[in-house]
Image (cartoon, rainbow, N blue to C red; front, side, top):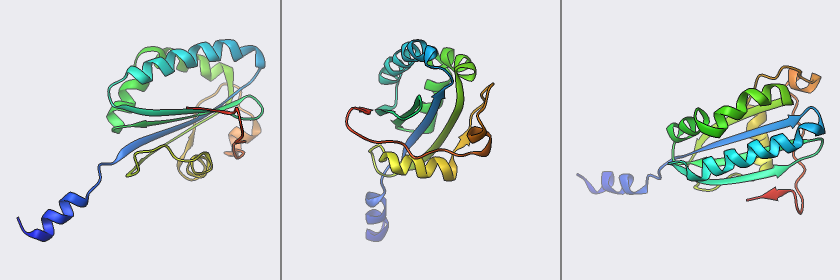
Length: 154
């Protein structure tokens, strides 16, 4: 192996997988149930193989953002399709009137800032299925997240 190829190999950084979600509840009455399901999903994520980090943001108008960092996309899919997370998904279709998700790979082993998560959601995200969509959900309009003291949990 030549010196050049050795240096190139050593400078490569392993990519990690980022998953961002934004969910907006239709009615405040769903909030206790939503928090219950969210806590179950958070516990599941923290115990899941390949999990690295999580952040949550309480936004305006009953909207909630999640950001998770994973070793790879396979770990993310294994989490999403099993356990508490899988059980919660059908409920969110009814509870939420806006829902979107974005995924990407990156070199940095840290979660993105919320403004970056919002930008990526607009550029690369997709709307999730909800039974009672708002006009904004249908149009793909996602307001920037409100970031402030007491709004974020890591």
